[in-house]
Image (cartoon, rainbow, N blue to C red; front, side, top):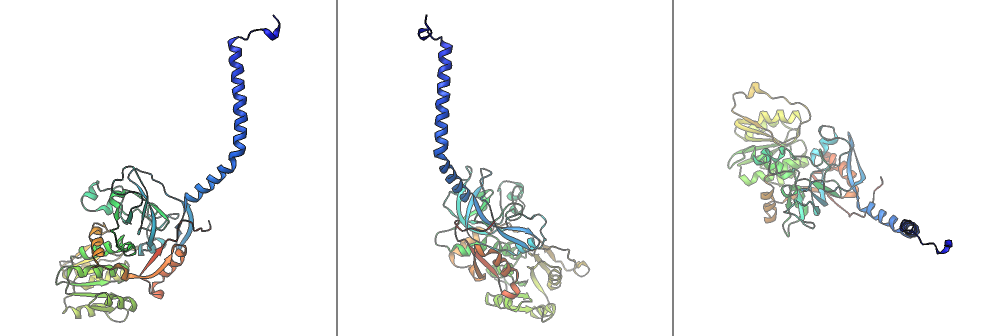
Length: 406
């Protein structure tokens, strides 16, 4: 039989079909690669823009820089990612950049206060959904470990003070919040979110670590040593308990003037007078029932010990970076108590209700406002409070489209 008319066996037919298919696919892939390349590049550019953000990064002693960093993602089912609308700077952030907080290492995004909108919610988050306006607590609480169940979420075994400390924080356009259901608070309709920024930390801290630990009660006398933002938050919340007298003590006349305006009955400039003698004169020689230390240096802790009345309580609020002396030689027989505490934020719902009702006005402590692009300037202003008279600085976000240099 001539070759042209010779029948093809099945294996030969199969091999021919495979070759034809391979050639067809190669031609198709070649054409697709050519026409699709511009689209691939365009998608990549868009995704890169959406997956990065601006953030304030701790770079070592006395160094913070505004940088572009990856946008956080959901890592656990209980996480939420919040798009920040407002944040602030805390005195603890200043302690960090001075090197006083060993757990916070260079490269960390700072900040543990803020309000914003839920951008993403993990599959196990039941209380919040994308679009919800929320207050971010400075304390992340799992709500189930032994410490959380004992009312000490500050020592949560899977949380506590982690934001801006051991994980990236709120001085950024986005933040990942662990245990979102028990670490976020819904912002009530009609409440100024700027006021609620101060409920992330300083108001619960002043109330819990100062006023409640100091057992401020009706008719007692209170001394607050250091009337910076936390001391003033203690001053405002102490008035909820009707003490007979609140004495504000500081070396900054401008802060003492603010304290008097916000309800202090007496002010003492301990750079100008003997604060111990002055307080004893104001309390008929007794001293104070509750003394709140809100600075965090040995000199003020020493002063607080000398202001205590017999049976009084020294409530330490300040963040101490160096050792301080305890004068048991003069305190051992005074029946006094000294308390320390990291804020648990268990009073946050109550404080939100007080702000919503108008009975607590945190914005009285805001002295300066900045856009997030000026974050480094905001730090300088806050860190030089003796020159700038800064109390709390409020930082607002311009929007995710703004750029910074890498």
